[in-house]
Length: 89
Image 1: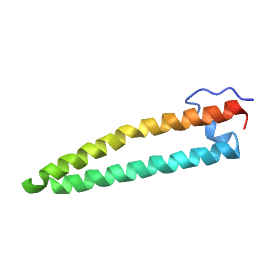
Image 2: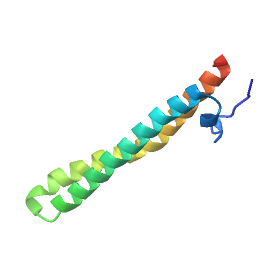
Image 3: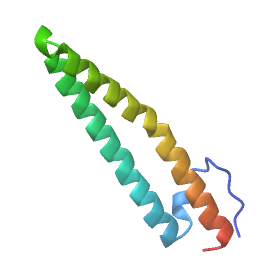
Image 4: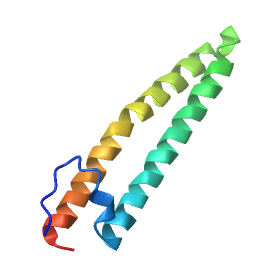
């Protein structure tokens, strides 16, 4: 059995189950980045008119929150993979 640290880059390569779990989290990580990026682009366009600045500000705030979620997704994934390793699966 492997002893793993929380941020071990080798975690996803331990077993088929690890790879499946890691792939799911990678999908959510990429989806999160895509949505955050779209919100920032749309928010940027909305800033060209003063009448849509309020909406633009909200899109920037939501996009910022999503970008803040990025490291949380990674930490949660690594905790999940570490637990699976400790279970011996």
